[in-house]
Length: 483
Ligand code: SF4
Image (cartoon, rainbow, N blue to C red; front, side, top):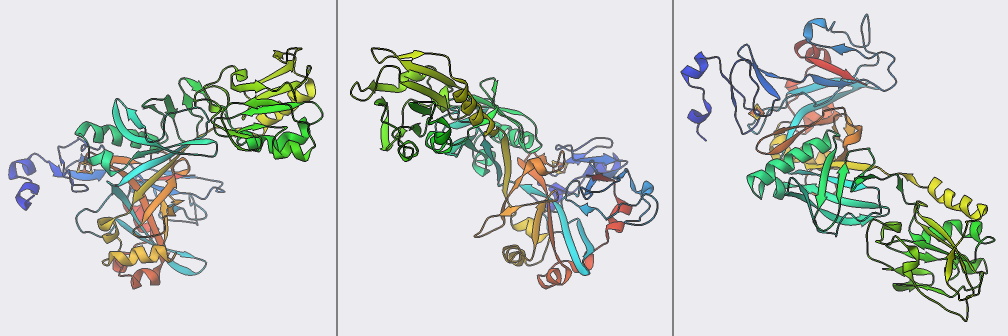
């Protein structure tokens, strides 16, 4: 794109049109209108950032101020009428962006901590390389690993390897944002934006379920809200509760899609000298009392497709079982449970569960944690963003790796991956409301702050001469202070 393409014509200038250069879209914005991302607007012929700059007050603050516009700000921090004590922390939310063209970051703010001169470099990063890692606390079957996750029919990510008690999704990333059709990129960007701003998004998984995901809220799988995250796998549940069952049962089978536990065979039962009960479950035996693949994955007992637990019993050995044998079958959350006694033909017959056994089933449920969705924003803080911090970008990367520079997003410390680059993750639930924006390239816009000692900043080639105080920032900008 030539300078002529970028420059406004005389006629456009005459109409009061302004050019936004905060992202490669380079919107021409008419008076009173906003740009394509709704983050910038033309206010009386001036380009302005629509949202206020967000400061974070310390959580223990007794008073939190809300300041709209510079005139209402007394310019005092930590002293006098209307002051905020202690001074708040600046975030990148509403800070504006000064790249991909080369320019220093919009705010390079000095402060003093424990007598040490510090600098916080603040910007809104535009992340073409970004996505969300989503942890969904449920054993219900969401879909096969590697299956596409869709919104409005567009693939925005995939199911990745399950974790302990949780299903995992990997969403977004540069291939979905830029490597597919325009619609795929737009839908992916929209879904990421909503998820990162803590809104609910319904996801459909190929060959599996639909799940409504919202950060820090329970997942809703095929219309049913998940309540509990399992206490452990079937084998772990046996290990935890075996002593409490021992005197009240002859056998317990904990139904689990991954590892079904059988008490009398399990190490936990043997340790308690339990007699073999002769009830053999389906699937592949891993070690005594631990069985894999007793059923297909699904939305039933313990993340299997089983609605009648007796389906997983392969045979009952007449040489070991006996009439009257007491059998508890239970899922890993305690959500499903049933009590059986063997009749004269050694067939399990439903019966009323004794109170002491019911108590332990309830204890399984009590030991489950509430099921939640966790959304981690993951992104790479790349070349031009770093160039806004220092003239020598690799030094910022090294400084982050050497933990001389702390990286936060919206004031929340980020986990920075080892290895090359500044590849980071942050829990969006901890970030202030509406921390994220987007640009139609498509890419997400996220706040990012780099905080380090002032002398370290100078040493890495930072724009030390552009350092301002927080008071300077407050005087010239609309500000919101969040708890
Ligand atoms: S999309 Fe937004 S940031 Fe990009 S040029 Fe337009 S108004 Fe500016």
